[in-house]
Image (cartoon, rainbow, N blue to C red; front, side, top):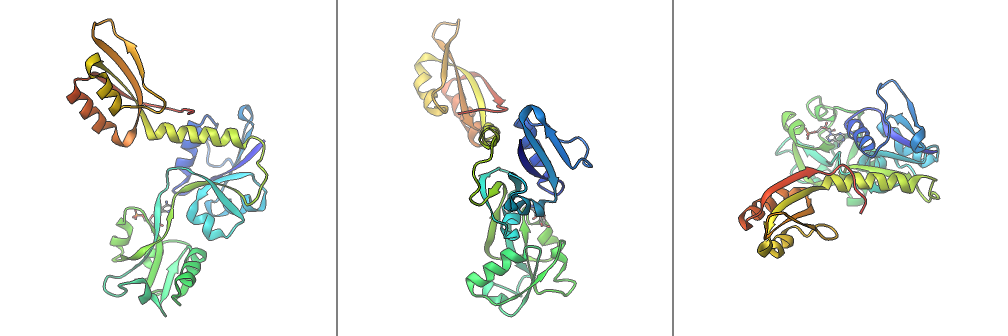
Amino acid sequence: MLRVAVPNKGSLAEEAARLLRDAGYRQRRDIRELTLVDADNDVEFFYLRPRDIAVYVGEGTLDVGLTGRDLLQDSGAHATELLALGFGAARLHFAAPPGDVAEVSDLRGRRVATSYAGVVEGHLRRIGVAASVVRLDGAVESAVRLGVADAIADLVSTGTTLRAAGLAVVGDPILESEAVLVIRDGAAEPAGLSVFERRLQGVLVARAYVMMDYDIRTEQLEEAVALTPGIESPTISPLHREGWVAVRAMVPRNSAQRVMDALWLLGARGTLMSDVLACRL
Ligand code: AMP
């Protein structure tokens, strides 16, 4: 049975459970459940603190885990990324009161508060800036106002939290994070992993595409197909109406509305866009 670590709380927990459900796995209904066996799919899920997941996987106690790249790197665990999961994107940034610290080199000799001490110390060492790192567990954005640090290093998603605390980003991102599937360094492939990974990948691809259906005059078919080439090739079906055909193709979700606009101008009618739940390419 494949043993999978899943975040039990925090920003990644909900999206991780949704991904697993969409991939056809049972997920716990009650947050007090610590483990869940999905016997039909031969997988056991272990709900753990997000920060601990890479540690369990790195020790080989569990086969794979869903966690953040930030937490993986900060843990120093012997685990590596297998697959990026397309959610939980955030950047780890230095930030300070505007005007005080204009660039990263201004951090020299200053105190930087963070809950990612491992990543931040490694980064400062690499860029040769000697600053002292103050380890905090969270709510790092208050550290400057409360006087324990001169700057912070924290995850930024929209930037709202930073602005509200009167801080501004300094320099380039230290780390670009997102949710990832991790496995122990050098581990032999555990039984059931390839099916598990293929299912997650199927959901990720399905989320990146929509299915588009439309009717078009045969004279415009080639131009229309150039707009919607699909993945393999679009399906063309005859229509009862003379001189028209129906086309069905997968279209990248992020350009789907633009493709619809262009198809309309080309004379396509009855255009339908639908979600794809899962797919195998
Ligand atoms: P924002 O105000 O959207 O920039 O969010 C910043 C706050 O949310 C900070 O307190 C971060 O620590 C936290 N945060 C943002 N994105 C993530 C993420 N992907 N994983 C964990 N915490 C995050």
